[in-house]
Image (tube, helix red, strand yellow):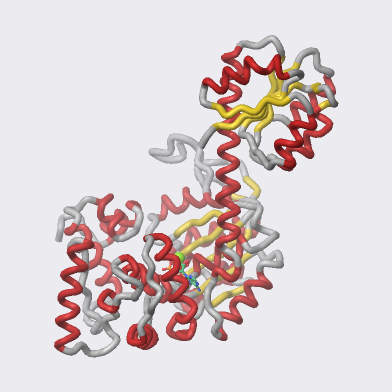
Length: 475
Ligand SMILES: Nc1ncnc2c1ncn2[C@@H]1O[C@H](COP(=O)(O)OP(=O)(O)OP(=O)(O)O)[C@@H](O)[C@H]1O
Ligand SMILES: [Mg+2]
């Protein structure tokens, strides 16, 4: 991307030297000398430069009188003024509205440093704006696909919840039902909240000490390894939304600290004395039923009551299979675009399989199956051989043979990175977890970084699990 500069000088002859100087250094420079020309470029012409270098007075008026109006047309541009014998009130206005100013005479080097810094600032705000406007578009209520009855009810509730100030919401749902998606919709689709930050914190697998300092932050020297001050998730979420995923995994004593922070609207960093104000909407998600966890004394009742101002329960896909008709084409279109494929045909036998399957991994599982099929498609038909929905029907010799050749081909594409787990009740969930992690470690020669990448988790979570299951010695 080229660096763009608008040079606004008393007269163009004066500015020609500076224009040439920056053009030779790779800038795209427009040189103007009147407010009418500035308007033509950035108001009528929609041109938005990264840096605007300007003199205060021009032949047809003072640019300061038009600055706020101009700034609304060029959100990302950073203004630098070059001033000479300026009126003190004008200088105050410049200080208030511009990125910076330089008094004449100045050294070219000083201007270069200022221009480079202004360019970085402009790029940064442009990227942030792009990111948040694409998030705003991406996470509107209709991003939650489906029109079955439970989904319609959910969307009605989402519409209401995005219009009111609500201090806390609990989202319950099986894995892959869209808890993360709904949390983002609650933030970005709300005019009340989308201007503030959305900070996401995953409580799963974090060792207690780390979780505390991630949540509340810490001061330098608070514990061994705390080299500098750290602003925790709660502090970062102030004025916006804190999304606490897998909150059921939070140790009881931290739950008590969280409750106190929410009630007092204040937090204290680990090792810190000062109380810092905290005001954010909290969205807590959990794959386990928190109410039942409270009954078993595995989750604090007082915290649950504080958080469950409103509870959203997300329906599993098997309870709304008709939504597949909307979900499947949408997901295919997304992967067609990503992988430049052209799948448009879904044969009847595939629809039958999709409809008969139970989708225990919900939309995430559906997305994975479709991604695999689209990636490995060779024409416009969704290939049945990559569907591999195993528990749909008892396999015949024919389908077994087809599966074997499919697996062989899949292995050739993806390497030997599969784990087989019996789904006959002989293995507990925890044993499955251990088995998956041990197999992934073995397949990656116990390289933690590679293993974490292969199972889509973080190194911290993986290390926690390795310790928990004592998997270090390749047992
Ligand atoms: N109704 C939906 N419409 C479109 N996409 C969906 C829907 N529900 C979920 N998804 C997509 O499915 C994937 C899994 O959803 P998400 O991560 O939000 O689930 P989750 O409930 O947080 O799962 P987990 O408990 O495993 O973290 C995401 O890519 C999400 O965008
Ligand atoms: Mg999630």
